[in-house]
Amino acid sequence: MKTILIRGGRVIDPASSLDAELDVLLRDGKVAAIDAPGQSKLKKDEEVEIIEANGLVVAPGLVDIHVHLREPGQIYKETIASGTAAAAAGGFTSVCAMPNTIPVNDSPETTRWMQSADRGAVIHVFPIAAATRGSAGEALSEYGSLKAAGAVAITDDGKPILNDAIMRQALAAAARAGLPVIQHAEDTRLTANGSMNAGPMAFRLGLRGMPTEAESGLVERDIRLLAEFKDTRPHLHVAHVSTAAALESVRRARRNGLRVTCEVTPHHFLLTEEAVGLYDTNAKMNPPLRSAADRNAMLAGILDGTVDAIATDHAPHATHEKEQEFERAPNGITGLETALGLSLSWLHKTHKLALTSVISLLSTQPAAVLALKGRGSLAVGSFADVVIFDPAKEWIFKAKQSRSKSNNTPFDGYTLLGKVHFTISEGRVVFQARG
Ligand code: DOR
Ligand code: ZN
Image (cartoon, rainbow, N blue to C red):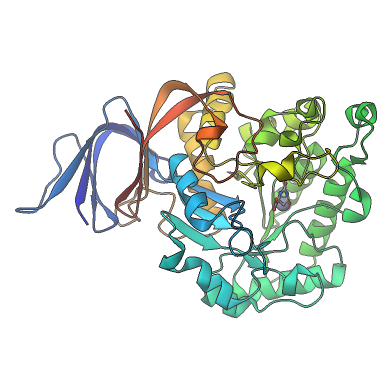
């Protein structure tokens, strides 16, 4: 592996409060040094690749703690190879893969299989394992052995744990294993047959709605259960928060000293249910796009620090699956190649969130939420995971050109801010922009 010297860029590392013109030296897959311009010391006869980064931002590689890679089982939608290639193009160097594969990832064997070099991942994949066997919500999977196999959290994403006793057991066992419990907060008893947010828009379209209370009610329930634990302090992470009420519950719980974190997706801080238009299935996902008031609450939560991380919920589906009646089409949109551009244009340019905060929400903070050691930081000794992007460049995203196997995005044709030039994963260039 060649040593890489990144010269003359604006190095932003939220983990070490760094924002200055510096050179970054990557050696043997790790960050070897950060030096004043021109001061990096190379070894005698060392082979070095030089990347000129004048005018570009050099930041820790992005970390997405919520992606669906579809492998094993649905490789016509995505594979670990294609999903990680899309991630690299979007500036990501780590992704956490949800367990709703076929079979469900509830075993150390599948967890290991997903991480095998044979899968062709170009960046690091951290599996998240199922909280219960088959995500059936009945018997817990074995958290200790899942963690030993490399799982970084447990969840039944998409099939939330509704039963109080099972959720209590999951929190207790996860605390013992030292793993966060991720909850996709949706009381499915209230959302049956719903296909978009409950409200005037659903009424107008003649679609059954999914009420906000289905989300906020389950978050409240989870927080109530979490508060029962006095000594072991389990960690609850609320996935893709989409409602003002749920975010308020997280805010309050945190103020009361509970160990709760949460993530918000770009589509929930940017779009509203209006994007459904006339039954656009590329605006159908779960949780659904909400009202403008909820969308604005996501933005406020990002700006005031309640939101710990931006995560994409990258959920690829084939065109033939999305080209069906709205109610029959599957939930989910892709997101890996648009997350940085949407965050920069909407949060940084429009809402004046500092560049370092945007990077932190996409890298340092998500890595901290799931305790991914050596990720989300450019500190010497960290993994040489780096994204180099032009923060001022606007470009048009074309879904057809995606590296993902699927094109189900509502952001086709959007003008995005911030063009990724290089993505480096553990010291290897895994994406380089053309031209
Ligand atoms: O929109 C979604 N898509 N929400 C989920 O909870 C699951 C995901 C998927 O796997 O397609
Ligand atoms: Zn989910």
